[in-house]
Length: 410
Image (cartoon, rainbow, N blue to C red; front, side, top):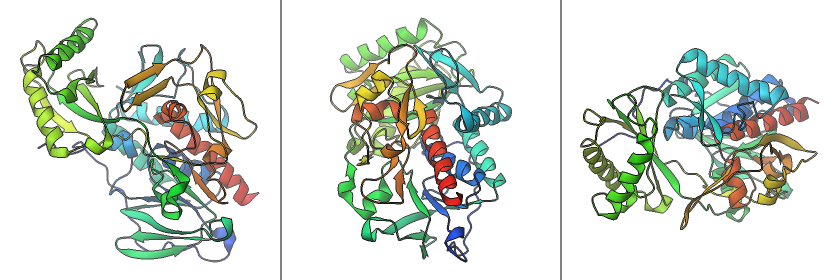
């Protein structure tokens, strides 16, 4: 059986002392739940803005979907011309992320996929880089293996939160609470009706190593996809492989295999069997004879639910490149909607289009002090299908973190 995320992991120091803020409200931390792309960016930006931050992560390690689901191409950092999407302080934070990743691994590099530009990374390197980055920030307190288990939302504002750390409950009165769990898990604690259901297939990634270099070079990759589809149609491969997408990794002998399936249908043992059968089938093909299954990621949920915010980002906003006076960041990724029934639906935005994501789309409707950033922003399903990519989630978190720090200290 392939272990989920079986790549090298860097440890995160778990602080077990009582995280309750001392003194008056001026020292109350910004509480961020979830140490994925949006949560990391929010914590870093808020801390650099001078605010104390408590970052809680349910898992034993940080890195979110990139590290756990083995995402090796980071979208949303660059536009179709290869230029950075974001500018100013938010853009500087993302530029620093890219620089740190390149310094840690020279194989990290931009690449073109279709009309898009992505950053190719090793997920294990990404985890190590963001872990070390957090450790440098004295205003951030990171608690892994912790979870926000209750919220006091009396009188239309966040009055308190309860965090479980190592089985112990700690009562907090945060200045603001940010849900970056990707599934709006914290907002659901307050009121499940504040969350719209998700509407997208999930992705499951497995990594092969030992593949002959150049095996997926054009036109071999296209031919392999056709061969895969024909094998599914003939019954030689299971239906779960029908939308499989193979891609090269940062290593010359790596191939990433991405399967797409409904979240409710995910069964680890069954999918391990599917991957084992797929591996056997691939090894009969040129270039794959020595391939071995290196790792299988956790299920990558593309849409785990979206908050009902003060504003709902729309597909029309994206296509028109709409600007908002309360913008926290910009996006330009195509509408990449993995529809539960129709499969992937890819719509490129008009050339040169960049759209704003307003603060109101990250503000939970009717609850002051409660926000959500990342995949669970307030958006139509097809708008979320563009905004959910890693670079845009970093942008949302960074923009929101800067706003919260300025509000706390202003």
